[in-house]
Amino acid sequence: MLDLFLNAIAAGILLGGFYAAMTVGLTISFGQLDIVNIAHPAFIVLGSFCTFVLHEHAGLDPLLAGVLLAPAFFCIGIGVYSVYYGSFERRGDESLRGLAFFFGIMFILEVLLIMTFGVDYRLVETSYIGESIKIGVIGLPFRMLVPFLAALAMAGGIYLYLSKTFTGRAILAVAQDRLALQLMGADPVRTKQIAFGIGLGTAAVAGSLLIMLGPVEPSVGRLYIGRIFAIVVLGGMGSIGGTIVAAIILGVVESMVATFYGPSWSPAVAFGFLLMTLAIRPSGLFGR
Image (tube, rainbow, N blue to C red; front, side, top):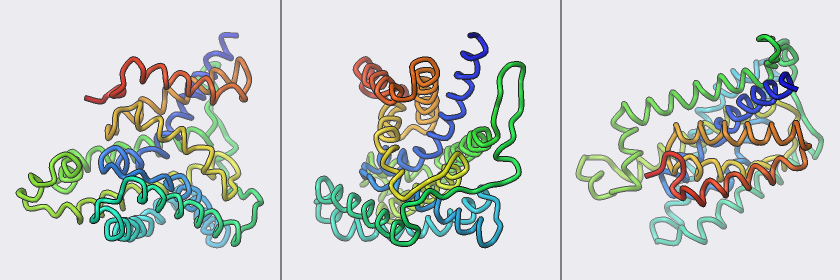
């Protein structure tokens, strides 16, 4: 029983790292820019299929493919935000109509993927995905360990960028005091473009991690919408560190429930735990 318990904890921590990779981009767009990008999981799935194509036709390692795709997704993010700003935010219509805009993008991406790849599951295979290491009685499969380490590296890099660079600090300030940001010589619109681009850039990497964990199909992103938004709120809106902690908490709770009570219970119990936590601390773990 102790072995099972320890392995469930370890699996939950690794799963939480993957959830953090999926959520860190939304932490920027939703938590710091107040843009409800409901299409973020769809872009992650797009990253998975782009990774699949690069792996199948160019033989690229999935993680390397995700890193190479990130600049392209960054440019897509700049374009998407430019359309969003010109159509909604500039006119003050970003609340409901902006949400409908991202819903539309989500369904367009899903339909395009279905038309291109069909509804079959796709996966990638590398020499290390099926391997694992043992630390005492705890088994750590590489297909979960690699995404966990990649997620920590990506989140750490974004945290350093946001806290140590002028543009990063401008991103942190843009949703709080637009006028003060302009007085400091920064363009709020350009700052938001860069921030949204970074958020979508992380989706490419998260997509490569998703297809490493298991097979994907075009609509699989819907399974993660509730999770990643809940993690952003639980961690404290806009907090990168809070996102990591909240993601690991959710991963551990899901893993424990799935191990001892069955996988069908894990989403309900995990979200119940999140709601209970937010009832006690509405601002989230690291919110102010």
